[in-house]
Image (cartoon, rainbow, N blue to C red; front, side, top):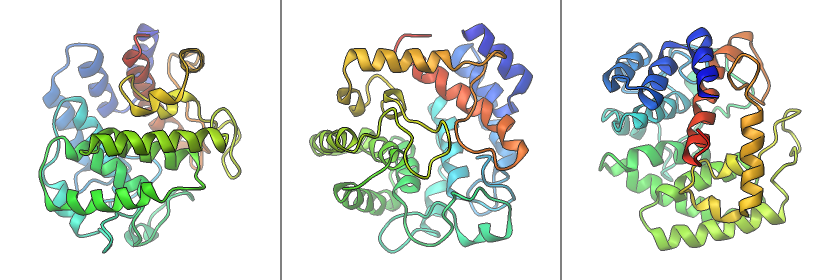
Length: 279
């Protein structure tokens, strides 16, 4: 599996994902990951230039930033410029939008919500990697927003649940996070969010246990039996394509993203499989 994935990464992935693979699964240089992020940096302290492939153009946007932070997390690092930048785009309630209005001038996936209101998804995916590395006033406001939003979840959908558990896995108040995760897991069961295609999702855009419990130490691991999780991991492993990589399950709205995303989702699949001892 890993040899086929490596061949795919070298044949298909961007330089950043090649460098991440080297660090994660070989003996690569962590500084090379940081260097590969340099072309995506923006002068305002963020990241742009389609680092997250669904947003094209040069403007700094939250998805590009959390993609950068995830890569830096692979090497135990962060970007200390980011919290100051986030303060400039944060709503009064402490949340960050998925995309700012600057994205109106550039090609973007139709599911990117452009606006000024705080988003659970964006804020959680930014908070989690930053909270382990920095102390900054932005984190306090974001945390308050996230607790209020997560505690208020009733009717939900898989991507919202993914974001919520990302926050809860990183939250500083562990007893509260454990209780909130238990409630969230009950909602996942009650609303049948596992193994089915929700309304409005693309054909084949189905979430499985491993999509929620991306690592063995996630609070979401407790939502599933051993048999359910093993079957989910079997499914993930089976999705390795003939060339050795993994494909996206959502819509390809412009040709470039199929290739650009493939390296990202291949790295993500390998990280999850390794967390559970499958790699």
